[in-house]
Image (cartoon, rainbow, N blue to C red; front, top):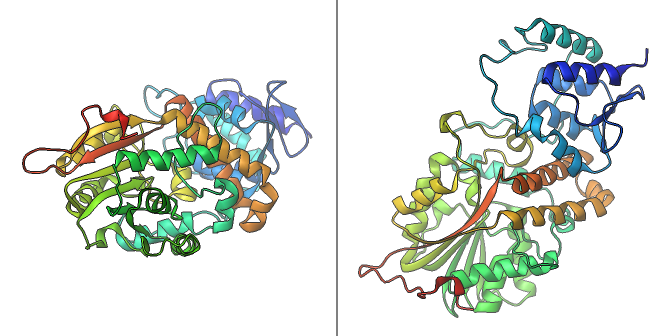
Length: 437
């Protein structure tokens, strides 16, 4: 009997308490849902088994990465339509419907129990498939220990420099760009690097520590354009090898040193300035004070820190905050986001004087959409360089993140802080936002 899609639509309406917001095509060719817009294609009933055994984002993610779920049409529109079910749904009042975990759960509401029984029948046979190979291996040891951090960074960044080149473009900058109306991705990334250098007031001969230097773009820009002496550190061996090659090709080996090193192991301060762009999300809430104090000790009095970091809104009860399952399993293992106020507070507790905060939320949405466009244009080559599952991970992660920034579920901020001198002079212009331009 070919009726999978209509049955799924009816079950979804019962379980979710709302009509299915997108059209669905099932493995038997049937369709149901709104007549226009993107189509969620359930290519195999295996997708249902994944979602039954791991309800929520992780089950959906496994089905997507494995190719059991695909999308025809605009992925951004589809994610926008389901945002109310996945990310923006208001909290339920009273006890949750699922009292006990399991393939179906023991649901309190009779209608829910009947719906889950029908879903189980559609999903048979019940044993769940193994997670896709792209899922991060379960990690042992204390969270954010040096060894565990190295493994987490390797999972994300050691995917292949050529793959990242297809997504990021020739600048090889993997953080929020700084856009002008009608500008290109390459120009926006150049402008972001220059903005960081100007906020740090770099001058020829200044010592700059670039924490989480990636593929070397910030280090190269600071040395080439400002004459700074730069030490770039990363935990990724592939990134370091790529960055060193770029340094040699540009003839900047006398100004730039790239190390595979944990920030906690840097002992050769003091530095005149520190840039940390897109790295602090990997530090972890429990380690953030150590991170801030370590950078404070590495700066000379009067030295500047530019901390560029993704933020999340504060929760009414911060103890209920949980790390996104898809991101933790497939993208940034052990990554944690904090509210902006928490970050500023920790920097101040470490002894910094925070002098400026600039929010760049809309800029990151534009950056991610540009990366998605590049990945889609180069899809076959990206798959060849990694795997179909890995390419799907990056596509979903970047598209969903773009909407997160557009909807205000995520933010990104540049915090400029100074290590005070005994007399209190910060060495900053009275009109700070000129940035020396």
